[in-house]
Length: 125
Image 1 (cartoon, helix red, strand yellow):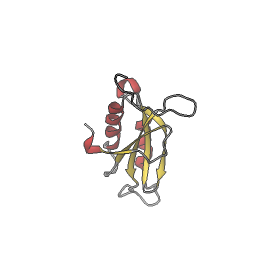
Image 2 (cartoon, helix red, strand yellow; image 1 turned 45 degrees about the horizontal axis):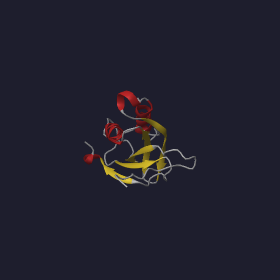
Image 3 (cartoon, one colour; image 1 turned 90 degrees about the vertical axis):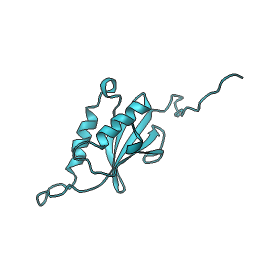
Image 4 (tube, helix red, strand yellow; image 1 turned 45 degrees about the vertical axis):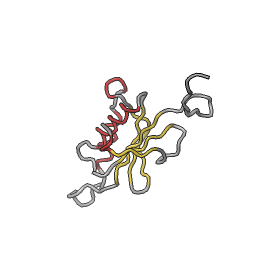
């Protein structure tokens, strides 16, 4: 046999599982907010940025609504090209108002949220 065949995740319907890139951001309260204000206004701002991503121009698009996972808030992107989605994820994770200390998890639509390959923002390039 010539060549080789790469393993591709297949879901229960027989279709290839979809790439999902999770942006994990520490749940850090926004400093100096007025008394009684929501501590994490950056979550809605980031979700708005994710929602307007365009696959053709940004290389990624919104996969699903963000979700709190323990000590982080996760935002979900998808796309056809892993490197393009990672670059879009880095732009979101390092954008204005986003708390420092975030990281990326590369997963697929069949994987468990928060599990997969961890990629540091500094390694995306």
